[in-house]
Length: 144
Image 1: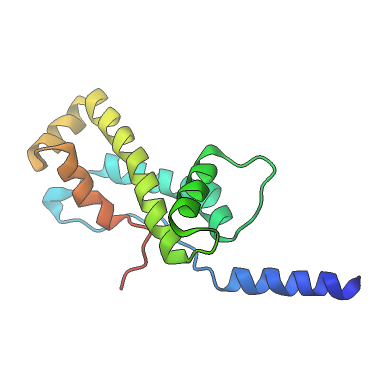
Image 2: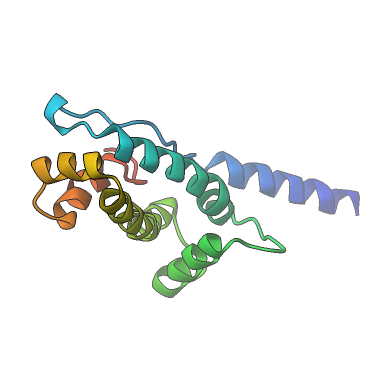
C-alpha cells in the first residue's frame, strides 16, 4: 500500500514538472497603439483564466465542481485531440476560447466607454482588427 502512494506521488511530481506555467504580463506596444484599458482587462482576465481553467486542464487535475471555462476547454481539447494531448494543443484551444470571450468583453467595454471608443476608432477599423492586433500579443502559445 505504501509503495502505491509513493508511485502516485512520483507520477504527480513528474506530470507537474513537465508543465510550463503560462503568465499574463502586459504586452509592449508602440506609443500610438497603447490602450491601457484593454491591456489591463486582458491581463486581469488571463490571470484568472490561467488559474481557474488552464492549469487544472493542463495538469489533468480532476475537480469535483469544475468551472464552466474548465469544462469548455477540456471538451474542446478532447473533441480535437482525444484524451492524450500536449501543452501546445491546450495552448491553441485556450487561445480560441479565451479570445472568443475577450472579444465580447472588449466589444462591450468599447461600446460603454466613449473615450475608449474614440481611441479604438482612431487605431482600428473593426473589431476583427482589434483582435488581430491583441491576440498575438497575449497568446497562450510559447514564443519561438
